[in-house]
Length: 89
Image (tube, rainbow, N blue to C red; front, side, top):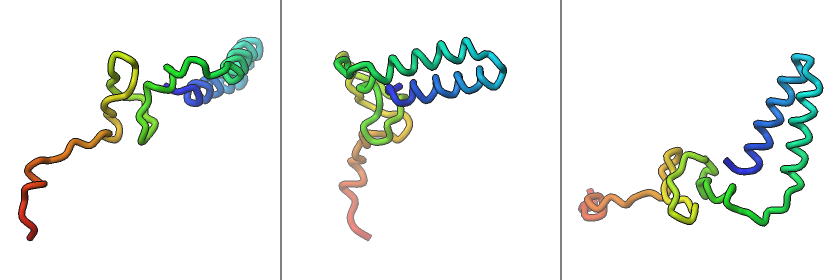
């Protein structure tokens, strides 16, 4: 998950808590959201685990946390060797 997705999820949770009159708990979540939003992006590892094409988080990564395959959109697309060798119709 990237930072934006985490903050959006926390926002949803805080709103649900508010709707159930759990204001103190919602404020705690809101404080966490604010701290996360203000945190300087020195550690980019949280963003490296997402697909560069669709920004999905269902990816395989290498030992450094860089994405190597996305299960959402299929990035990077493997070339079909048989298709490359076909004759035009």
